[in-house]
Length: 434
Image (cartoon, helix red, strand yellow):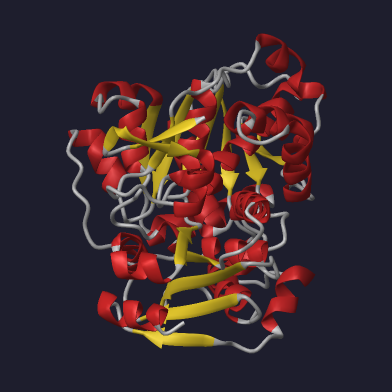
């Protein structure tokens, strides 16, 4: 399949090059030239299929023209070695639990798929050149990507994260790995980390010095596979007889997650509408209200993975809808919540239902609670295990949060990170020295 840049539809490339380069040469984001609709028979039978079977059919629609079926099936099955079940929170609100993977966050799906796809392409080339993956993280992306690529031959990962602005457990998940993973602690905010990554791609001297790609949702191999679990959520709700008026609410930061869901809807997935739940970084919410996109520096919140002031994937949403604000508002509504509202929601939900949300999931729950119509059923994405925000959640609920064994293992490691300023010259000098 051909992929084009959101900045220029004449700037095209192959899937392989889109994955290996990450960002288009004109700083645009790559988009597939077509969205293959899935057949009626697929949706008629989806409730009888496993997660892996569903994901493979969706993956074929995206990648089937470029990767042989047997290889693609192996990549999908290796990626999805865990489940993403729906859980009833109350009568008309369900949680899609995306925290059952190795790092207990939704980004395990895209991170693991990209690691395996990039490894596949690198193997096809004979692994002659080391591929250097740059990834900016506001929390869970870094751990998912680092663990997905850990030990993969021919690939080195550099994780850039904002100093003091990710939870201690999140930090442990990518700073204690060593091997082919290097953590870089940037004296700034997430947007500074993301800017460093984008600037590195555009720098000709760096590009000639080393092969660079990104594993943020900038990369099509990271964000497209996230559509898998939207189809799986629909299948599970259909089994319960609750899929006819299904509304999906997505806690939204860099907008890769909700964009993947919208891609699914454009391919025929019967989701009635989407809600994008923001924390205090309400840039998209304000766009929906005004039609004007006004990025600004991000502010720190207790839902830190959503602390993004200039979401990259907004460009993909604009492209999908031809920059038609009215059309976007028809499919997507918005909500925004303060730290106090998020905390109140976490406490309210566990008190009434016994279900413990993390701060991001709480945003999703609250938006459904306020926005669902009487005939609708809502599914919110519970994007990470509450234990990843242990101190914050325990302070809110006034009790302990059990740490799963997977997280506890990371906390036993020794932090290894490189401090760096937010100046590109310093980051460039560091990479040139590698």
